[in-house]
Length: 291
Image (cartoon, rainbow, N blue to C red; front, side, top):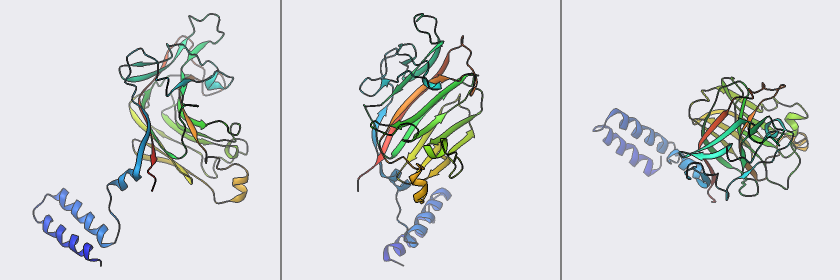
């Protein structure tokens, strides 16, 4: 046993004679790690992550999201994007929160969209390869609701889904679950959704505040809710799987925050007279310190 292990062992024994039970337990754990030559750090120093991007949404109420960090997503035919609008009423700051909404289109008569939806992204402004994203949010549990926090590859990149997609959080209508997914050519086109499992969900009150997290490195994607692990998508050690796009996650990704609606096919159609709202308190991105 190394000298420092012996020293700390006896030191902890002495301290335990004069301290509370909680402190005794802490000392015992420290001594055991030292005796076994296990290096001790505080939560592994949060894996030595450092903050590289954040938005606390503390701008003036009714202002637009910080244009140095966010741009409006583009409207196109995908379900989530079919009604995206740059209206200031669908993505704005209020009382230190980002408000993303889907609202009835009662004002822009020249626009054929049945509703107007808010979606902002860091594309061409901020992207990163590997790290941890945490976002604190709450949303509705109402029929037709379809919000998401997710990531796509920063261009230039392969066409979707060959470049990959990482869904940090999604919620569907009145469904009492939060969903977390990795999309690839392997999972979508080849149907390999269980090799390995690519989607995870758990019951959670999405209408209450929670912290949703993804940790991403060169071998795995890990999803957490309130610091509890919900699922892991691993890179397979298989040349054939890699040739077929099982792991396209080794390049920079950007972030999307959006409030959308379902449709008649999935998950369910919205109430076109209703306003859907997702509130985001903050979002933070960390990367490991360089050794």
